[in-house]
Length: 297
Image 1 (spheres, rainbow, N blue to C red):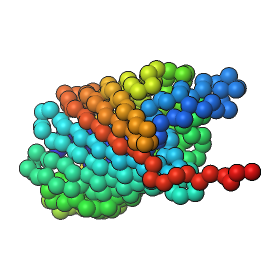
Image 2 (image 1 turned 60 degrees about the horizontal axis):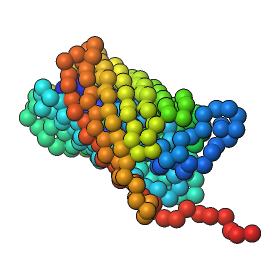
Image 3 (image 1 turned 120 degrees about the vertical axis):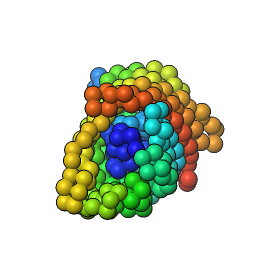
Image 4 (image 1 turned 30 degrees about the horizontal axis):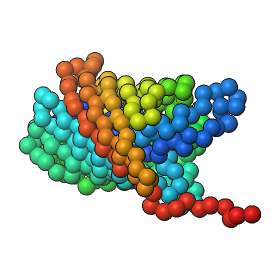
């Protein structure tokens, strides 16, 4: 498998081109306390749906569920990675969010197609939200060995990931996102059946133009450094670096349904030089129940 796609498949980190482990809804358009202090106010009706490669630090709003599909294909190898993610805020306290990611992949090296390792995610809205100037929402992910490592589909053992996304409103037209994180798989296995403990680290950043209510222009970059098993108890280091221009837009319905398609073109630089990919994105977000309202006086 192309190593930038392999990085995604073994980690699902945003900076490892994770397939969307976070989600947010359309901004309400209400002014926040930041606007009264001279800081940029949140643009009304901005598309706050998650980025493609870099996590945004916004949890789902109360009563809103999101379904995310993402497909990435490498032009040279023909390898591809498809992920489906579903995100739910916990009832009564939207600071807590859970989600699950189910991946499928094609690996040209072993001529294999099938499920990769699934991910169970928990996120906590530590600072701010999508209406404030700064937001932070750390995530903890548990990987389940649902793929077959002997076919290069999966890491061969359970693992953990910690990711810290930070989102900053630069102005009414610009938002920036930054990610730092790491993975640990205590007993990874390669195609030959050899096992070793592996780690990975990642960093990512993006800037997004949100000057239109229903259209965003995006520029993301993600770098990762990761280990792979080469023999029993031994690993080697490799790295991946992508720069990805993209675009996303929204269709909003009176029922509360929001549909967000998107497309991006990840380009490998440095250790990933020569890699050319296409990324397709589709999100459905809708209410699953009416948020609790305070009783009338």
